[in-house]
Image (tube, rainbow, N blue to C red):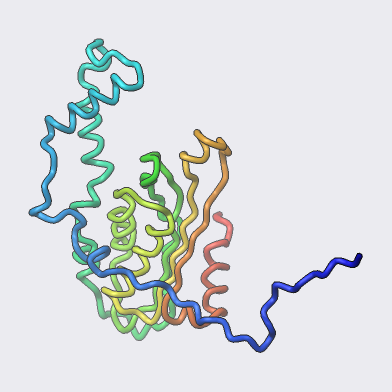
Amino acid sequence: MDALIKSIRKPSDAKLPEARPAELDPAEFLAAAVRPDQPRPSRAEAEAAVHTLLSYIGENPAREGLLDTPRRVVEAFDELYQGYHQRPAEVLDRTFGETAGYDDFVLIRDIEFTSQCEHHMMPFYGKAHIAYTPVERVVGLSKLARLTDIFARRLQTQEHLTAQIAAAIDEILKPRGVAVMLEAEHTCMSVRGVAKHGAMTFTSRFTGMFRDNPAEQMRFLSMVRVPQR
């Protein structure tokens, strides 16, 4: 008996929904993530939680080498997650108008970052490549690196981190377009679970002219991929 194979392709004249990036709530990328009135445990309670975790893994929190570990871990958390207390909008609030009519995009590539996976609280790290096409005014180059750090120093997924960086630049600077690409290695995949060291994850987000013009996307990608000297 002959098998009947049905095509899963849509008819050539079928109209697919137009793909557009989902909108993010501006509260996600304009203000600090922690509200002043948000209840938080005390430092002593946080250190007690670390003490409990040390006991859980089978350690003796009272031994000499671990006596100060709860304090050190909480201090490390204050540094690793400082992005919760910073306002992305303040980083991009100063721009410069002396551009001599410059109307092409500005690209900063190889911005190193480290973030923490929200699923396992394990690091992922790599590089961010950011471009935007200004309208009359430009922002200081270091500000885009600082913006990346603010979002990276929160519990994240790489997809969300990519979207937040692009949305903040798009909303605050209002350029003709934004392109963001992140490439990162996730230790929750490389040192646990499947343990595939060296596997890289790539994510991208395009707005405005980069989203609507494939040629501009390709130009951005080709400049990102130029080998370093």
